[in-house]
Length: 474
Image (cartoon, rainbow, N blue to C red; front, side, top):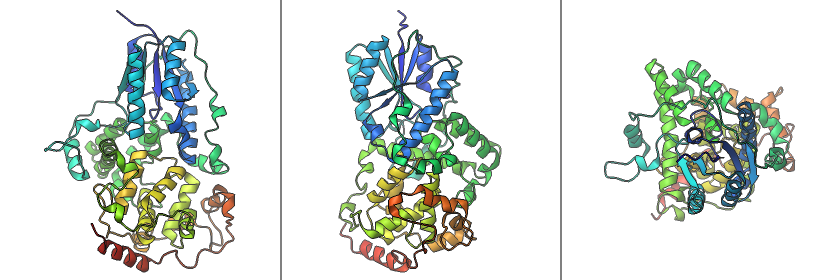
């Protein structure tokens, strides 16, 4: 017996129309499809930058759906209540969505699925946010991978289905449910004046993501193995923000990467490995959800990190005024663009957790507020990896030296000049933009003198960190 009642498509971090298994299934089910985005607690808890960037993505998707004769319904409230109300209003027979893997999402989605099924509504979740479902990748002994390299070897030759096409038509209901107005949500309010500074640096939406992937695969992927570390160059794909909001799918990236490998692009496999590093992060957040909040490795709770966030030294780190130019340039890049070069992220995190002996969670929380490409799994893994307390972590005694890193990856100082205005007779526009983006309460000006002494000297900080490591009791 066919069921032509509407299907509600609950959108979260899958804000695209191509390669969208839940959308395709909703269309194939027959009957109208009602796309909805719910502003629940998980949205309201987002930091200022990711919440603002989410709003841009939703605006773009709403326009793309309108071009298809559909629309995006906006509702606010607990997901279970909103969906139950929508089902009744629309007379829907099913709710479909794409799976997420962080502990909060799993708990919420499990509750929603149980509620809907108890009320006789078909409730199904679909793949799409990762390449391989976390429960499908196991070691030879069973269980999940705790080290990246063997996981890469286990999945690199796996078949990944080709990307699904965008449905030619998305059936609309005869009448649409009531919808909030996206602009009334004011998702970007907490960005204040920083939004105008960051906006030109965002590549928002599916079309922009596909264009960026095409450019990268055609022009830069061959040099990626070395180019990805040159902080002043455009050697990275820049797709992290698009993957975060699901404006592009990981398997679209996967197939583009392997096509480049087949065509002889030397650095392409290294880029595909980075996609699997993202997978590694999501598999870990699924199997060990404590990674988002606690030290992943046993014993590290006793490590003598400083946990007070209101210290002057932490403020100077946040402001990009540590007196260590590579660190400061990276922090300022984040305020102007909403993003930070991956090599620079490691330097910034290492300086905070090792030279400054500050708990990694302070840095993680700050990135959660400031990054437009913030991702719950990658951010948690990245901070714990650099701090030394996470899975497959860099050994604690590997302490990045910002000066030697700058010599290797910003030899002529272009990156540092791009982001630091103080001391330059003719500062770059990007360096000056930092002062337009930051909170006024910081009271900073390009006329200020650059810090003469670092918060923590590089040799001093290294010795302090190594001494703490040697004295550990675990």
